[in-house]
Image (cartoon, rainbow, N blue to C red; front, top):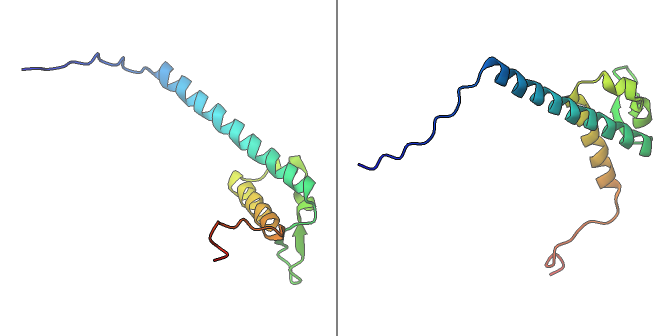
Length: 107
């Protein structure tokens, strides 16, 4: 019989789990902060892009400059921030006059 034994991994203690959890939380907070700064940068660079409409009877357009304040963005949920970034990036792509073609699109 050829039984290959691998060394037993040390059982994690609560101290190990707590350290792993803190590292994970710190990484998540860093990523969320970077995402929110990216939205602020996009809103500042492209203030006239419409990112939504107000919930009033006139459906007033909301421009990126209205949400460009980092303090306002800090209060937003990260999923909402990502949605705004997606809207702005799509508007920029749609406004760009040049479309990438593949080699055989003209055939």
